[in-house]
Image 1 (cartoon, rainbow over the protein chains, first blue to last red):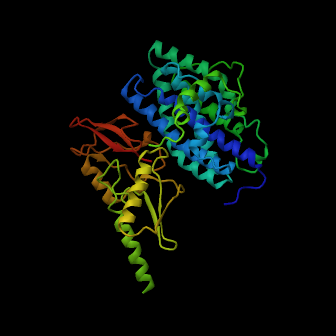
Image 2: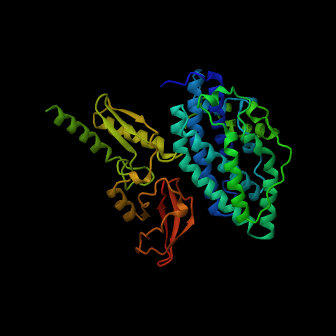
Length: 257
Length: 163
């Protein structure tokens, strides 16, 4: 397989790492709901979404390991990197909060990821294209489920309306980061490997406006955006998440099933 | 003669694979589920695909296929995993659909592989055949199934998701 030549190897690795880390970290967060969600239906849904995301993370991180060329597989990259080596966006590492905040986060992420995978399925990197085409089918379900819950909560009781509204207000500062490819080498986009996420913003805003109208929710006021996840500058929450997620393979490095 | 021999070899491998059950839904084989995508003689290999990216059965399926091939003295046959084009529930064979229904799982409607479940038609109840059914939970006991209920006989049932 030929890798498009315009792209520097490091930027390519870093980009694939982003895709894998977004899926992995959100999967870990969603897994925290297992056995604690408000109803059996939502418990199943969040766990299933987490499982799909772990599958996607495994494919992306496995490929990232090949690009890196240091003999790291997906597990090694997931369990043996420290917090500043993670490239996920800040949105996915945020604590779950209540169910309203979790649904707000899921709606923002899955709507964005759906638009991203649609474009990535046409990447000039055939490996990324085929992973995206496969993952897109799963993400379609995630985005639909999240949108339905935004409507159920927003157009539900006064309490559920307030909770999901607060959830969006909390998450909103992390939205801008999703639509920037910074600080990657621009060649990763011009060569057609990566998606210029800035181009997804109009479709995202339009989907959001439709869902919010149905959910009788006001559009969130834009707070000062927070960025940094793509450079490895994370919130304090990611370290705690990793200490939980990575404990077993670090304490028992040769453990097998 | 060569052509005949090639066909026979391929049929033999397919026969072995058709006796490998899906670990989660053992009433159907990996061939009937559309997991086996191709069998090639030169070099000898079986091309399989995953249904859902995170399906925990994937590794078990590979191990089961490996064992079945080894037991049939087909150790030289390699297993390759192909992602593209992505698996769709349309690849479940007619026999596979009948077996799912008899097992109590409503098979997915055909031709809606890429579509969302929102627009999918109502499932047929595998118990009483009624089409007065409703979705209870879009995500079910495994990644490939949703939970439905029959309004006529009131039985809850699994439905294989359109994918």
